[in-house]
Length: 629
Image 1 (cartoon, one colour):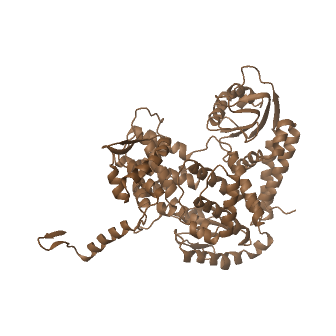
Image 2: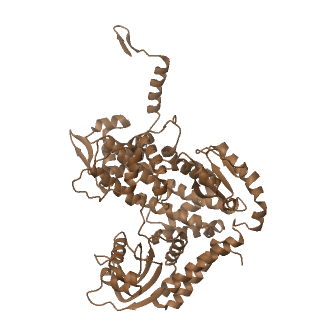
Image 3: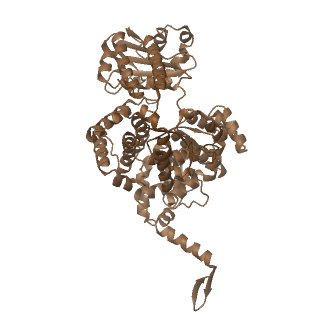
């Protein structure tokens, strides 16, 4: 309570605890001096969470800067806001606000949260967890931390209906988008029906809303249905996941560069290549869009990996000259290489582990992230319930990592906290060295790959069968392009008919539509070539197929005529396709960056092309299976 006494002044009266909390609020608010990037994030957040203008004076006072500084920040933010489909409105005497579709505002909030919140911020289970940084607190409030937790547990209950191929990154992004939507609805910011048609409500949404026990208007149901369809099944029609050829080639060149500098066989580490491809494409896309990169671990990364940091930074500078990649992003890339070096030298073999967690995907995800960072030589082969884990065949794994007690022998599992504090990291390392490795010492000496000879023979048979079926059906078609038929859509029916399968012939129109829809998502031309790759997965395709079409003059792939090709490689696959076939098709797509194969595809006969691909796949399979001559 504030007391004013004439002739004496003013004073505050309160009990000791209340006064202490009051002082802490001042101490906390005065401790932050925002950088220009942090200031812009907070301004963007304030404008997105209000649907009415805010005075410049209010923003300047809150962020403790001058009004001209805020005005300058808004100048620099305007283009990025426009790219999000929103408009920054600034009027003298009126204030400043962001206007635009509710969908665009939700997407902007989701992007900010995904880029600036860590997994521990999102999935941390501690109720007393204090948020130290204002940006973190602001974003957690805008996505609705409680809604996030409710959704995470609800999706966990829907495990049987959930797509098995959804990556952890896609899962987190989906959770954020759903949570933002529910939080915005609670604040009465709703989707309007005008101008939007999102189709029908899907079964997954009905189940989700039943668990959450909430009712939504039809427009919001359609919006969430579209969100679940596009995010939960993002590549349902794609045959190859890593089809961005410039990214693949850039990653391979970067690995070769670092490998040459360190004299370590980094190209043998398939996990390094896959991890970098998944990381670099979205990360560099955010840099191109002018979004800032935050890396709270930059200082310790530089300290622990000083020479490696310098090598990676120089490699990125030489290979990605069109981008100004900041040290914060270099730090994340260095972590991938650091993990690879650990995998190559630490344990005599990989340690296969399964995770058991009963409190939701978030807890197991958080623990998985911590393990991958602290002990990357551990290969996490799956997340299981305790019931499933206790019934796994012992030869499928080396140890079980659980967040709960299990009815198993002590040498089969270790109990850890989802947050994996430092002392538990040491506990896990000691357990592996003192229990797991000793228990499997005989097996490790016999086979350092962790696979028995029978396992490798069975996998070799499986991979070989897939390769033989793919190459046996491969055909080369040399075609004459008639006048007026230069567009891809004109050629697709004839191209499909040349495959010679009745089921494809009877559904060629539908398959052609899927191929064209994929083409509209981006260029299919292999960089610096006249070869195009087109591919799709479809319910109207019975088995994986490869076909090459060569034209006597350029075929137009885009409406503007700027994208042309002389050769087209078509990959087709059924909607449900096993991971081994997808893996080999992805490897074939990566071969399209090899000059020798490009030359063969342009000029040679089918037999020569098959021979080259079979040799390269043989080498890949031997490396994959750690085969010894």
